[in-house]
Length: 162
Length: 176
Image 1 (cartoon, rainbow over the protein chains, first blue to last red):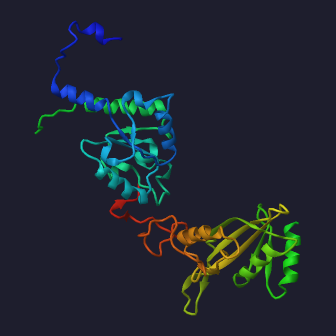
Image 2 (image 1 turned 90 degrees about the horizontal axis):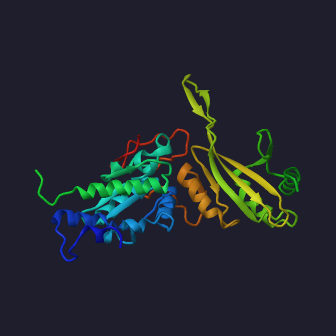
Image 3 (image 1 turned 60 degrees about the vertical axis):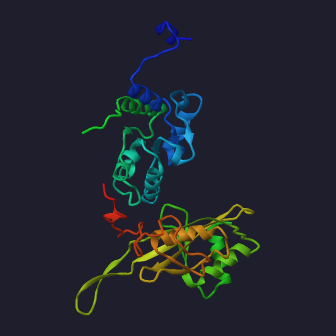
């Protein structure tokens, strides 16, 4: 074993705040909705594959929105698709997160002017937690986006706010 | 066989029809066919022993945007003569020669016979031209939208030159 065996003398009890524990559990098993749109989806698949290994962060694709924690908007969102994405998002159970991947999903990308059929940013339809820039972003960038999302979850609270 | 030779065969076969040969553009020469002759010409090109154009490589619509200003009796200017075109790119597997056809249709009534009965693959190509330009293919087996959503506004054709992007689609703002 690596770090933990040097940290604790007694191996039975670990004291932690329930909030930290719950957040740690949640951020360590972010299941993504198995869903891809365009060329960004190829990078997303590369990130899932063995070389970059999304699974080491606990990210595995789930083929059902009802068992997914995060939806990765990986590519150009057409108006026709946007209504479907909204429905998928609404079918996901709370708490749910959205990573917008690549220029198209962020702001329309190369289709910003003449794309009569392209939604200029997925945040016009559903709320985004992390934007990953790039066209398409490299797997490292997507991993960075996921770490940003993990940081966000780590600091969430169970307490009622406001 | 060169396009010129194919054109000669066509002219001999259809003496009453009009064929225009165009090689002015820096692309492969194409032949302009009268829309009413199109289906017969296509069947002939496919079945003729020495031609055998058995493959439709591509079928695409084009907005020529070629309207000219005309003055009517009262002196008001108006635009006339704008056409939509359909291009047919043919290829023969057997002889490895190619041939390009074009039909021009008036924008007020863009109707042409479907060539789905000649080459099966024309089905989806024609649906795309219908979707994007509003070209009506007569006797097409299933002329419905293929790319745009079914609730897209009727009479709004995105690839026509005078198309203007609508403000909203289903409550989603479209312009940047």
